[in-house]
Amino acid sequence: MLCVGMRKQKKLGLSGISWQIGDDKVFDTLNLPTAKACFFGSSFHWTDRAILLNKLNDKMDINASIVIISSSETQTSKTDVKWKKTIKDVVKEFLGEKRRAGNSTYEHPKKRHEEILSDSIFNNLDIRSFERKEQRSVKDVVGLTLSKSYASPAQLGNNLQAFIDK
Image 1: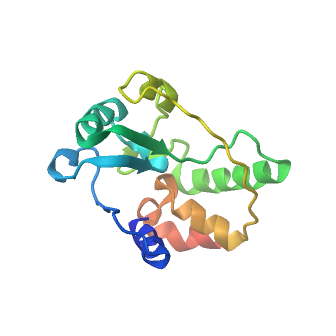
Image 2: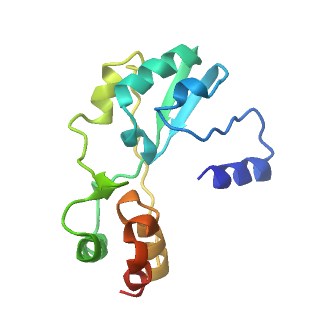
């Protein structure tokens, strides 16, 4: 993800962007400058969100923003439902019923992002939705699935090729 961002930054001739590798557990060691904005993709749900927001408060400009960009599956067509169910079934076939994450299983957080943010210093929420239609080939869908923590090549191990072939 960082490599893609850096390539786009270079292509667009942008400056003033600091790219950091780390997570919420090593945040304090990153020596980050004061930031005007902090962006998250789907990664936000992997953090200890309330603690991280408190830490970010100390590193951010007084008028700074937290931006969380994530896909939503609230409006899916019948075609979307069919291929997503197929992927879910194949993942379960190879990895079992419980959703995996790293070397354990994953349970969806009980509190929504909006609730965590509302309880933080970053409680002035501006929620926007954007619709985007995509056409994906089977290869695209397999690649997308392998990019997810619950079906990564590391999770699949020696079953990776059989998963791709399925």
